[in-house]
Length: 559
Image 1 (tube, rainbow, N blue to C red):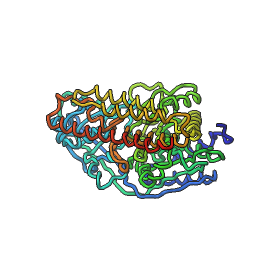
Image 2 (image 1 turned 180 degrees about the vertical axis):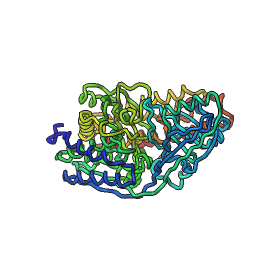
Image 3 (image 1 turned 60 degrees about the vertical axis):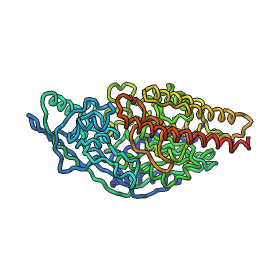
Image 4 (image 1 turned 180 degrees about the horizontal axis):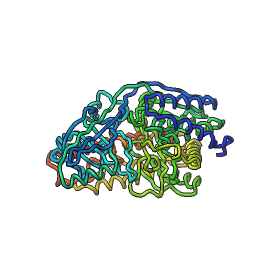
């Protein structure tokens, strides 16, 4: 596609200069000033938009400290984690290092090790904090791995979006603090020769505040639309995470807004509540526009940390209903190089739309190809992620321009295709590989044979649909519905109208309950409980696949 409106570097420079002075934690004045600026720019371009304003629940880290009572009494700089326990007066306990922080253990094993202890660990993921919370640990000190000795901000919230009466009690009660690598290593060295106590203080503000969600709406010839998004909230001024993404979104809006022949409509969203609200903005939008998303949205493209300094290669993170060639061809054509890697989508990136059964989900990441050792989840993997050092100099305008070109090309492909580009053969085979890996990782008695048979039957039915004699309209309808439901099954275990927790469990999380399970390490009760849950998850997946077979059969009269 040839665009009459060119990418304007100066336009993006002005945007970042504005955002570099705004510390955009959702709910504060700077975050609303950021929305005012985005809307002002949309108005200047003559673009249509809506500004949604709503209440949301936030957990704001205020301050933290650690006092060490060993042979040499001293204090350590620390930062509290959003959605950790609020202990402004502090809590004192013996500190103990978790040598096996990456190993899954039973509640009983953890209790013997850590009950009434403050745990020192390199792990801070939500499922790990949940295990410590349940086993009776009274706090967690997380050692950041960066050689630059920075302490990054982070959240340990277990609830996706604003909590409900159903899940509010699952939020953690223990304080969680982050410290720098050098201080962590010093603690580890002292623990080799002595036992001692520490006092941890963590002040957290849990509060309901109003926030704004701006969405640009560009009308195409079809009401079907592509959702492009990125979060505007940040830790500190957050230039690479995610002011660069916000500028890219605005530039895409400016360019697409000048098009007069768009096949599909476009919605571009700037999400609030990504960090201190645990994706509360995108979750609110899904809750309040569920039918619209379910019926009309054909794809969600999330833009986060693209255009970051030093990060010249791209990691593809997708549900892969489109296969791998779709994105690979575009990135290779634009950049001259293929993607550096392919990953499944994480439990993050404002991927709040599994229930709406959108058929296409993508979150590209810029990656610094020279990195070794610690690689941050955002900011191109670079050390300044989620710190006060994520400043204006961390943007790369040439890479931002390249990112705009990539997103425009993906949007064009999705928009112009009369039939959704569903690579069902790749998706089915990839699913089998994943499930076979899960099977091979455990010696518990189970198998996924019925799931494989259901997938084979569905693939055969889709092959019969994918014929020249079948109308594009019918083929598109069936492909979208099936790709959307299969995406949900790949990443979610709950019903369509709810949200899973934030635990990073990987693809097919319900079936992964048996991943790496050794039956010799289980009690009789544990083995029974796991196998019962697994059977229900198998029934769930097989039943949903059979519903898709019925969808094809119901529409067979039109073949």
